[in-house]
Image 1 (cartoon, rainbow, N blue to C red):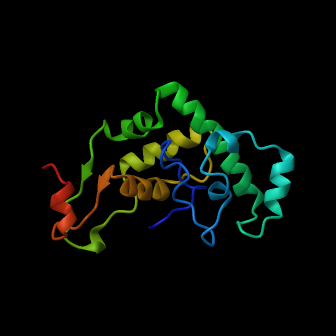
Image 2 (spheres, rainbow, N blue to C red; image 1 turned 60 degrees about the vertical axis):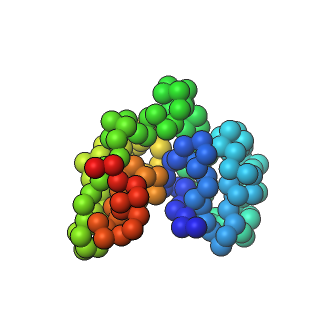
Amino acid sequence: MNRINIHTVPLNKYTFYKYIRVKDYNVTYKFNFDYNKIANYNQNKIDELLNDEGIIRNKLKINATIKNAKVFIEVQKEFGTFDKYIWSFTKGKTIVNKLESLDKMPVTSNESDAMSKNLKKRGFSFVGSTICYAFMQAAGIVNDHLVNCFRYKEISYD
């Protein structure tokens, strides 16, 4: 499974912490992806994590994970689901790029720029446009399969 660093991507309830990988072990794996639990970490837990050799012991990233979990919960409350919020950047539609070669594949888009800006405004950290675009690809919000890839036709609705 390809995984991306959660310090850069806030995901929906089912995938919020699934994509973390740090030596095949991470604080969120250790705590079963429970963003509610992570949102309530205190200084004692932060100190414990800073001494855990199984994770990246970067205080900024640990604090960002905790803060992102709190903001994630706020977004869920505001929109009903995080899924509804995140799909709003494409009006609920999958963006289908008709790419014929990898060198034409974008790393950002107007939608990922808007998502990044809004996530930051809400208080998320480590959510730049490139990371948002990578998330959009992983979540199926954007289809960047090459047109000659068998998956392109399987997941395209055009």
